[in-house]
Length: 316
Ligand code: HSE
Image (cartoon, rainbow, N blue to C red):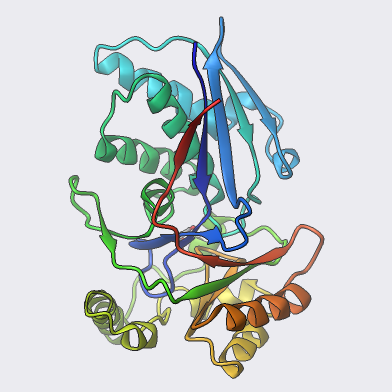
């Protein structure tokens, strides 16, 4: 029987200007991995093993692990489609920190579904699988939003359509942009970071949000990257969420001082990102963040780009 391993990259949710509808996959430029992996092989009964640097931060009860939930959900959907699923042994390599704003739960979910779908000879198409991934992500964060699962699954920068199919659109990328990203080491729950947001936005904020997103999409297609960067401002969440992030204002000020194009919170934080016009500039911001934004031994920073590919499967 075959054995497979699926890798699913970290991602930036919101990308500042697209709350809940825009996301981007991440790949460190030094070639290191920044994403969870799920291995799958045949077994007599279902089992899950969890390893990796952040395995100890997950609940010990494996039946409540999101990967176990993915397996049961996948089997139910197989049954509805008139197909049989056999027991498998899964191993989750938990490489991403939990509550980091790097799409950690999305990475586990995407790796699990990708491994399952490949193992069972691709019974589900992309939109169906993505819908399943969004549903599981919603179970964890309290609301269904695809801004992490979509880029993690598909790669690139993705915009959600709000329609069942296509669920998502891929935006053009600028190969010259580098992203300095830094996880501070503290954990921020997405549910808590959503609770502190107002339930309604005023008219001026709504107009700015719509204008920025429209201009951004146009500017990427027109390859006017200076214009695109000029509208990467978060008018929805950052004003409220930054109070949860020690050192945020100083990090933003440093990033602006060295000429970074934009700065913001990755997903619901505490990870922050700076959009930089060169690798050297991203390295300078990354070094600052490593020294001043990181709060404990769990924190780290990387210079990344947005990969064109999302999740990947390898035969073991
Ligand atoms: N769009 C979500 C939020 C992303 O900002 O709450 C969470 O990773």
